[in-house]
Amino acid sequence: MKEYRMYRSIRQRALIFGLPVSLFALQMVVVICSLMIIIFSFGPLAILGLALFNLGLYLVLLRLSRNPHVFTGYQVFPKSISNQQTTSLSYEAD
Image (cartoon, rainbow, N blue to C red; front, side, top):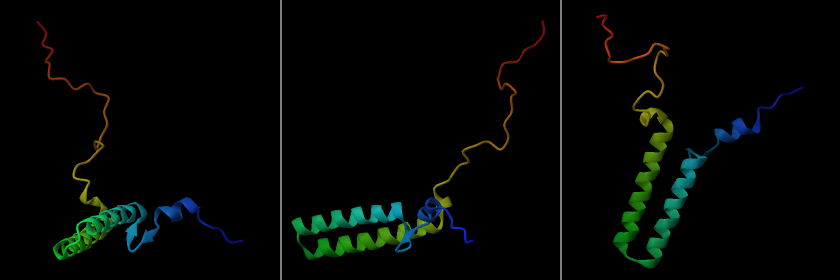
């Protein structure tokens, strides 16, 4: 009998135009906003500028989806966990 992976794991790795679903949704929101700007301020420079901006955003999102460690600049958890109390007070016997 053939086993199938859970649908949730398949959906998490789904790609649309090489982007994960969340980054693709961000790209589509930007495209729709760009179209609204083009509609209300029709001009050749606006069209060219927004097309270049959308292309640049798409390339940046592709690079970020291929290298997800770009945003992890610091380590969240310490390498070792200790119960020892850390204080700067010195307890000297008198």
